[in-house]
Image (tube, rainbow, N blue to C red; front, side, top):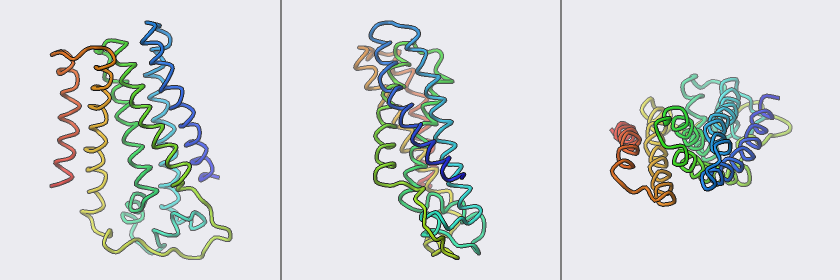
Length: 223
């Protein structure tokens, strides 16, 4: 049941992302405060839904639920817990879900900590972030679903790639993703600035902290 909840959360995430990619942008064009206010609320909601989905997959790895094809292909009941958990992103489907989680995490952070931004700019930035999230959600749901079941469930898994069973490689992908995906915020600010016509010194000050944060995570991951 938890696996199905994770899958349905991804479907709801897609619906939320589609609305978020359109309505706040219309609000910014019409100077409609109600529609623009949907941007931060929708971004936090989207993060909650994707977080629920990622948690469901993590739970499946933690309890060695081999009825999930992704867990069966990349885990084993005798693996240490640290490698069971890192196995969540030690494969294509799980790494795409982690990528999406970090993407919507940054959107939620802009929603929460970007209150100093003009309402129309923040709404446009979060809408552009939602465009990216929509593309990843469609890709995951249509081609890389991590919640596919196996019936009957195998008694044991196929184990995680031995190359990935290393403490350094357990933390390396999340740090790199925090860096790579963090730059999506910079992209969204750039697109929003072009739409809003705000290419100025104020825009540079707004985007600078997000650029430095992404750069720091990327540096840590490479190190």
